[in-house]
Image (cartoon, rainbow, N blue to C red; front, side, top):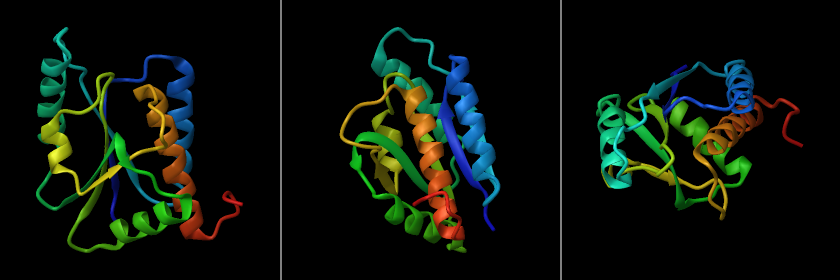
Length: 154
């Protein structure tokens, strides 16, 4: 089974976000191997420059065979069972490696969005990036549990 890579910009600052991410990442790993890779926050005070700095760190971690899913408020929302199906397809594809990306406080640069195979939204509202990370990890855990036939999703 392929490893799911989670590329995230910046460390979760608040302990409750860190704890929640660790909890759901551990739960997700019961069903599939998953690795979190943290990209440093950009240093610029200008949001566009900051996103460009962060994009360099994100893009260097991507390979040509990665199936890239990025989180963006303008992306497509998927019900849990549809996300589970998409996760299964990504994990089982012998030619591609699944990778999810969450940007920093100002979102993702256009170069990262252009590299995406799927742009995903977690709902119609905008979430702080640290909370979006928690929600994504929970949704991936839920999707993996659905695929395994576990009773978590009911």
